[in-house]
Amino acid sequence: MKDRSAVDTIRGYFYQFDLSILNILRLINPDDSIEIECTEDIDIRTATELTATQCKYYAKTEYNHSVIKEAVMYMLSHFKEVKSGLKPKVKYAIRGHYASGQHKLDGGIDVKFLKDNFLTYTDKGEKHLHHDELSLNDTDLGEFLTLLTVDIKAEELDVQYRAVIRELETAFSCKAFSAEFYFYSNALAIIRELSIQPAPADRTITKKAFFKKLDTSGVLFNEWFIQRKGKKAYLAALRKEYFTELNISPFERFFLIETNPQMYMRDDLKELIHILSEKWSKLSKRDPVSFCPYIYIHGISDGELLALKKDLHVEEFKFIDGHDYQNADFNVHSIIRKADHDNGVRAKILNSIRNLEETLSTITKTRKVFQFHFGQSYFESTNPSVGFVKIQVELFSDIKAII
Image (tube, rainbow, N blue to C red; front, side, top):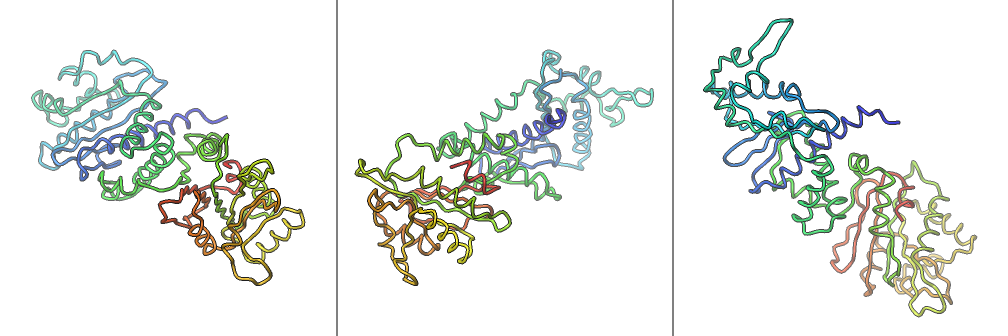
């Protein structure tokens, strides 16, 4: 069973990451920016102002003034440096979600309330007034309050998450699936990477730069996103989106499968080929429209590919590869010939990227390409008439689970 405190900590991280994404999506100008872990958790910079925001996520805890007291004192110390001319002017925001206790701030915060509840503390039995230590009077504190926003009724984690997805749907004019699995997953990776950079300048990104990095053309494996969704649910969602069809259309489907030398087992690959053939073939004598999948295996040696084909042949699994006799050149017209009940062709195996490209460019029917890769993508299609899906996976077994 997972340690509950660890789970709560991770949810806190997600809350901050999602709020960062939401803030940058809602920036008005392309050159406006956010800064991660600089003055505060999230600094929002526009052409006219900078707002430093601290996040608090305590979904199981009652709100008490002590929870944000340290943050308020820190912000007042920063305000003092601004007053002294040491730092530029900043607006301050504290945003938090709590299980209860929100009524404790219903009356708002005035100078007296600020001093009594946030700026007075005891250390080693001695009472301290933080504002006096900073030599700030009531007029100064009143000015500070005009710059401070405290929201302890912020949305719950999942509500905020849905708001992020809606913003992405609008920004990219896409469906919820694409917003979540393409753009949100990538956004999470961008914000996470920014948060661990040592230099403040490297933890800053403009809206324009964020969108440029965000606009990905494939499903990327992101450990944080998968931790949020759960591996089983993540794989099931990909299967539902791409590989569940009640009535299989007679498209020409290409499955590009990458192998990993450290994890490769021939039996696993053979099993996957059988699954692809069973699911994406139609060879019934009663059906005039018949087809079978094209399969390209990336990262496999010529010798192992030959051994794989020999195994399939021995097992009476009929396939073609565009080579009509030993040592023959690849013949694209041979491999694109129709698979049907009479010839029993259950799969078409492409030996190389070059064969794949030639086949795709020769076929005029609807083509769909599904590429599975571990690291970098190894094939890019520039043909707008080809439906192209790239899915990054962690393990070879993930491919089977998705398909």
